[in-house]
Amino acid sequence: MLVSDFDYELPPDCIAQEPLPDRASSRMLHLLRANPERPGGRQDRAFRDFPDLLRPDDLVVLNNTRVFPARLYAHRSGQRAQSVSPRNAAARDFLRGMVEVLLTQQVSDHPNVWNCLVRPGRKIGVGEKLFFVGPGPSVADSDKTSARTGHPDAPVPAGLEAEVIARGDFGQRTIRFGPVADFFARVEEIGHVPLPPYIRRDDRSADRDRYQTIYARTRGSIAAPTAGLHFTPDVLGRIRARGIEIAEITLHVGLGTFQPVRVETVEDHKLHRESYEISVPVANAINSAKASGRRVVAIGTTTVRTLEFAARLPAHAVDRDNRNANSLAKSHTFEPASVQPGRGEADLFIYPGYRFRITEALLTNFHLPQSTLLMLVCALGERQVVLEAYRHAVKAGYRFYSYGDCMFIE
Image (tube, rainbow, N blue to C red):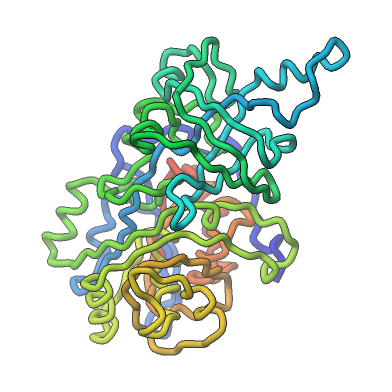
């Protein structure tokens, strides 16, 4: 299967640069899959209709991960740079320039060690030291700096430093931070909201609230599970008022969700692992719904991947300190459609041809061309049907991507 089969044309002005003032005022494209009882089709609706489209016995599953300000800026020590001299004047500018560090995942059992993306990263080698600067998004609010370009007028030392201990491809590095009293408190002070690169503006203090679901609880994501950004207390209240059950799982969004596909054939792409957790009560609720023939409605592609990954595991494969879930999932085929509770790392890549075990309906935003997220949506809704719906959404003026509108597939 070719990656190019998942391409579509999107004018740049269709990409939402700002969130709507009212979360629930988004538009929603309702996509009905064909089955023996109905012909399928699509309807242009509003997200406020979503609670009314649910069935009374549905189980709605949310991803309650919380985004943290994972984009940091630093100066490099220059230990791996050529000596500054009249013949190498560019080295001085390079050392003065800012380095963008996007924290992507905390390394298990090493609280000070993180995987990250570094930009510009070509000359940031192993042994290089990074000295982080602040302040955070409030600086961008006052127009004193540009977070995208990383050139503040007067960077303030943040008392946080790290050493590069491993190097990967495409700007990936592993860094070890020096001891600090409260690491996350420091990151909250100096970090920037990790808005996606297609949002062509600096992050602002308002993004700390708006680029976050109202039910976010567990810190760890570098990107929001964007389908959940449409929900308000009123919408959730309407769902509960109908007696519809709501359950929460956690998947911390990292490289596995948004990494670009750099191969020509879909099957050659490999996902990065992302940490997840499903509690025993939630697993029981999901399995009870499946056993009784009730529908499981996933809010967002990250929820789908978590549920489907956990359904591929045998009962003994996952526990509170699971380290073998990925190898077990890859080396066996497990037919029972039941979710195993526990904590682990998911790397399930879903594309057309995948047989869904848990998910029967999906609320999702519109995704980038040739992305793994679009491939997942096409696996559930059929590629040609989904791509035609995308073309319709472009013509109809839907807003795309993280701060954009949504689609409900059932």
